[in-house]
Length: 525
Image 1 (cartoon, rainbow, N blue to C red):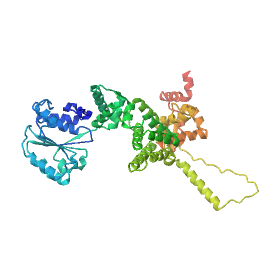
Image 2 (image 1 turned 60 degrees about the vertical axis):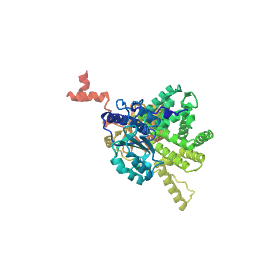
Image 3 (image 1 turned 180 degrees about the horizontal axis):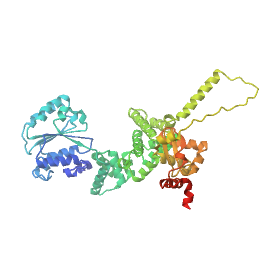
Image 4 (image 1 turned 30 degrees about the vertical axis):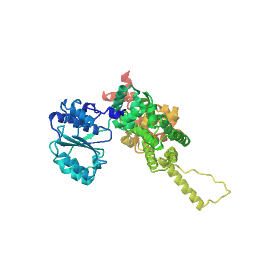
């Protein structure tokens, strides 16, 4: 009879357990030193090896020929535990045996000495499902069990256990298994099964499994039923995932505010029987990658995707500011929650696509523009209340004098800090005005209060900034990257002389040598 992969390749020794050295090494050391606890608590997310380690531990403490802390796997007790014929090792599912009567039966059985093995081992899975009265019935036995009894409690929700239970156990926390470790194990299994798998496909399965080896092997089992060569596309098809191309296309549509294109992509995916709630989840994962690229120093370590997809995601991240990414993720999460509450998923997704394409106008409007619109609205309201008197006599308009505020450049230089995101601004400018972006190559910028001060040896960029349309483009690019509005200025050095000017350096050298500056030409001759 066919055995599913997660059962067929379940580790039989501590050395075979993937990604949990903090658990397996400690248990092996305790077994070697014969320092066994009477109660163990294994906690962690699903599929990380809690039940597997429980079974290995039950064999190791009873093995007739232990091997350096591991069970031999060949003696009668080890084979009997694997076959389920040794009655001294008992597995209890607390989800279906959670009453006080079940625990009372366990307490009575625990008093009997083992029939075949050295220890009676009780493995209680999903122990957090026990009732309060059942926990109370277990408490005394757990605290002072007979010398021949070992309890192993396993749970995914340790916070639901009473403190009186956890304090009587030796606790081991199982971590989520890293995608690379899962991918290596999947490749090993495929090699044993004579199935070819691409590394990117194994990584994709690992990403979907979210740190659970059992889930990864179950999905691999499904993929092996599709074809003998497992590719990234076949994994997506088996798991019902959207093609990664669609995620990039939807993101491009959001960036260009093309609601029609975004809705069209969503409808096409719906026709292909793609679950819209799952599409929301994938989009959240995609924008999570963008968020990490913009915030984490080494994002590649935290993002599971192929190198080509990572490069493409990195490029998209340059066109997105962080507040916008957070807003998009929040909108998608809300849409998914509504879908799970029973609304029409297709309509909800279409509405969400339209929202996302207009989110920049809704959530990140220009405060200066809002202020000007408010002033215009007040002006129009005043004109309606007091309409102007129309006269035939022409009136010559006299422009009011414009008083420019004085700017203390020395104070601005004093408070200036380097603008680390300036190169992102230049890159953004290059996307819609190559000449403007090129003119700022090699420049740096500083932020001082409400000003961004540009420092460049290329005077062309300042000539371009004289034009109002170019100044607007630069201010918009800065707002796109920072989410804030700044005024623009030129970073000038004291006495309008840059410190790397050769003439200034020469003057400084003369002064240091005690030579009067006005005589430098004579002396140089």
